[in-house]
View 1 (cartoon, rainbow, N blue to C red):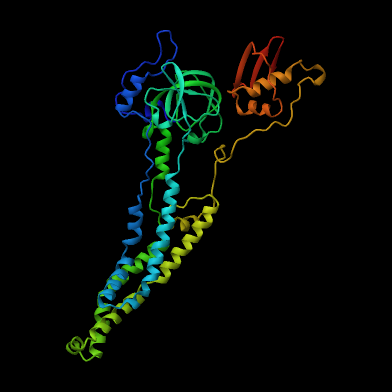
View 2: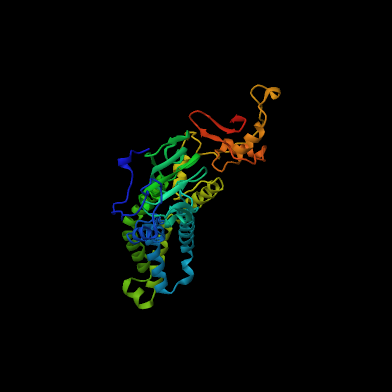
Length: 411
């Protein structure tokens, strides 16, 4: 995780607002402080646009040398009124439509890509907890955290009660990290144990999770040998096209009796159509369409496996991969724990009376970690009285405890 001085923060000055009370208890921001920060733009607004808009995708498929040559040929036939001879444009139109539709679908999926969920955020406002939408969190807000919450903003820990945070989404490290007062936490991480509160220090596009999301959405042109080969062929054709048209057009006009006779009789129209036909034959339309269709079919098959193909040519690059390495850190799997059995350490005969009720209380605790919460599957009736002492679970010591009058149960 980046050191605090490298963490993204807002450059705008933060209006003054009450945080701790003179007695040392957190009160959060009052309505006036929240309004001042909203007016200053210090809110958790997110930019969901990708770096490749629709018009840019359309331009990449429309404005190519390949389409320019065919477009000029088609425009010539339209001027001559030879509509039935425009069938050669069907392959070019299909090539454009398939590529544009596939990459537009990938863009829409990429727009929905986000490290952060959009669940309501519990904040402390004027001394009272409240749930607000993520885009209404402001700078210096006090965010209340409990087990299972995803941290929506970057912040500094104010209070921590055995607070353990899973930062695998950001750092790749699956082991929970204990956080104490004064520690920095990053958006995108999740609370796996304990509870606490943080003060917002960076939000919106300046938070760490949004910076990672922006990097994931950034479009990068891939290098495709097939596409570059087709581009070279079209460039060679564009160089030879002018003399080719001149040779074919002159031959057709001479066959019609010469330039003067051809223009007098109108035979120049057929000669020009023949010249256009010679150009369209030179352009490898079928090869370009076959390449696009092959890429599109491969992208659809990858999409069934939840693989996002942002650009069709990326399929060719993936086909050259021999070994794909993954670092198993818990980010590729869904964590879940189920209780199989509970056995007293010294056997049932010497078990402490009431241990089932103690385990039931641990499982019913709203701040229980996933391991403790799994106890609720079997021990579903918690005690009707509050414990005299509770030791929350810690990943460092790997145990928790609850004490009632007359006994203690460890978990």
